[in-house]
Length: 347
Image 1 (cartoon, rainbow, N blue to C red):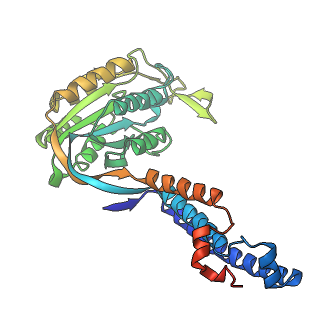
Image 2 (cartoon, helix red, strand yellow):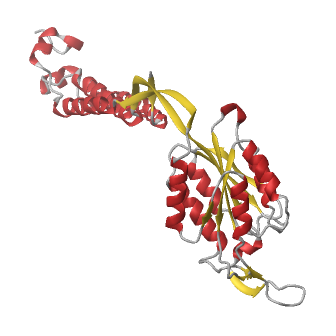
Image 3 (cartoon, rainbow, N blue to C red):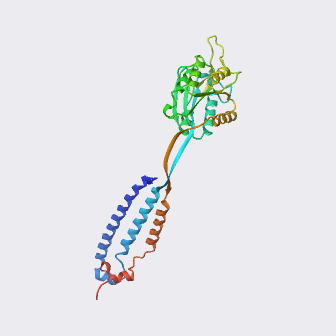
């Protein structure tokens, strides 16, 4: 099977007819100029070794060199072998809390930025697993469907912020419920849900939802971000802190990590709670957990192992250029004897 890597360079073939047209124009111009200078008989005597064939041969060689250069730039590839690639992995969904409490800076630089950092590092350690992302606050929002495109996952991850969902709160149950729709029943793999949050759940009914998820084969691992000492919730404008959130009595609201809720969710769904303040510890723990989960095949492809062949055409290009440079326009003796193009004159 033949494929071309850079097909756009095929447009350079249009240069060849332009070169040929210019050459024909040059021949006619030279012929007209010679006639104004002297007759054909006199020119034959003045330049008896002048070849009419060599200039045509030289331009043909130049055009062939250009054609070979274009093909080399296109880089033709031929499939030499067929291989079967089997991909095994786990379907992983990250549910990330984007409520306003995640702006708290009790863990540097903030809870939300720490959460994004954790997920990014986990993605760096994955192999052939599929990933999806959910953002949730007062409601859950699908951010990225299941995919193996980790670059896209990081791009969507970077876009997460605490202003993207208008309804505030921490509806963990909605995030779990939405995550159950992410997995493909027709292409079953082991299912894992990571919930990254400070654990402040204001909606309730978390345990029953987690239990339902466990019945569908979904393991839920929770990662707690924040400190139990807590911190105030900053109110920012253009990235600058203007004030801190206050309650109805005018007191500054202190948001605290609630590990109990996260631990209970993980327990109900055959998972584990992970303390998320140290990135290296989290990524190491997650890698160990995923290694112990049996992976199943979710993709098998056949593809051709293509090999480039541009080097042959590049070599031909240099050969033609070499011949063109060292080919003189004087007539060759044995060609002259053949009397091609009426180059020799009888006495």
